[in-house]
Image (cartoon, rainbow, N blue to C red):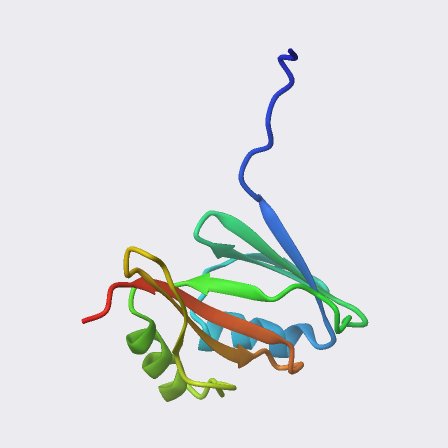
Length: 125
């Protein structure tokens, strides 16, 4: 048995972007994420306690999808659509647990056409 410390929650997620100004506008103005700070070629946003680090460079197509947890996926979808975010598909149920809890997703894209998603858990009405 060891007394090694365990891993904590994720502290930061990094993403490479081709145009830092366009990415900053998208994440700040359209998605409404709080900008923590920025430096030449870099911007840092708060994702509910996890930092999103955007660095200008050659963006890779194989980067992870960012799933944003929301309380009301229909309202969040409608709000972002009004702001000009283009969704790839409307909110839809992707799984129903044995207890009836449903998992919902709605995919959209960043300015470089990489997928992002809204995610929510909800009970059927």
